Each structure stands twice: as structure tokens, then as C-alpha cells.
Length: 67
Image (cartoon, rainbow, N blue to C red; front, side, top):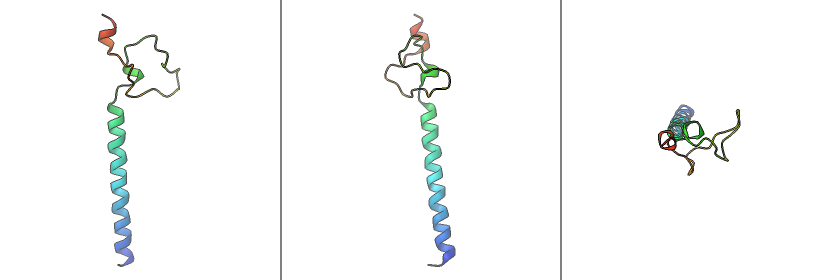
């Protein structure tokens, strides 16, 4: 196998890895998080600048919390 073929193969692997990472990021961005949660007084609500919880089992719809 020539050096060009090896570099092309490595480049293809890197592109596949990047595509996987982008798909993962898009999937995580679609999850509900603290910013879309309707609970006002949640014990896990982060302070400004802290990481939010994603896909939390305590998450509640904003419309249902007001009823």
C-alpha cells in the first residue's frame, strides 16, 4: 500500500469520526435540559455558568407546571 493510500485511508477515518461526533452533538442538543424545564424550584437547577442536566428524569413541561 502506498503512502498516499494510507493517508487517504486515515483521512477517511478522521472524516467518519468527525461525522459521528457531529451526530452525537446534535442528538444531545435535542434533549430536554434545565433551560427548558418547567420546575421553578428544582434542587438540581444549576447556578448561572454551571452545566445543565440533560435528559433529566425530573424534567417537567413548562405548560403542565403552570396548571
